[in-house]
Image (cartoon, rainbow, N blue to C red; front, side, top):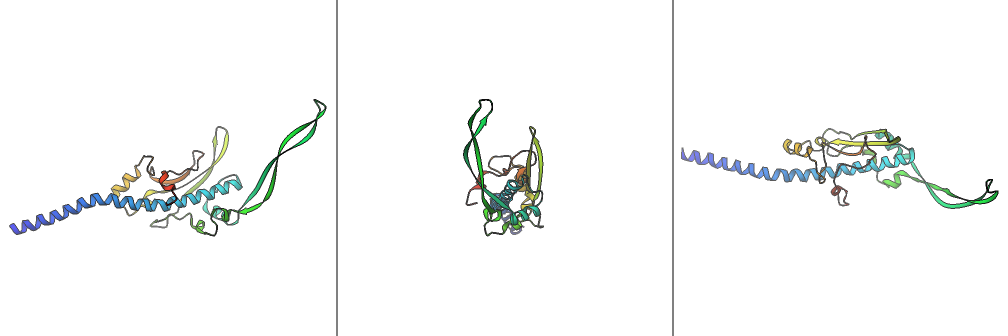
Length: 215
């Protein structure tokens, strides 16, 4: 029996060592995968935000679907204007004299392509609805609305994707921890998102580390 016990305990020791290694290494690998994938997802959400802000500048509201947004990027133009102070004399009936009136004159200089301003020659905007690393070709969810804020009708939008879509192949226990994050250093909640349908905001729910140039 002794040789058998030696083999059994040897195998158990190997298994135990492997489990200890996995318990230490798994979170490290998870964080590496998470950062890489979240960086790609957030990069696309920034493109969506830039496109939506351009759409609102021209149309006064946000696009409710990607088809409208992409078509706008393809064909939309900014109007370039300049303004200057000026004045003129106007007869004042109360004082019965000519009085100086100040005004602002706005001149239209021309137009510039939205596509060239945001993306240049890059055509990545045509696929900005596609979620990076998604197993089943999932798309970002995007909605736009008009909300009432203290009597002011404010356009809002939100684009988002569930973390489990991006981290579909990661350990379930680590994914659940990730979804429960509530910290200024983490992407909080169960989703990665930009904008809001309840507040006038175009911020994302990611920490500043994802806004660094090398990310």
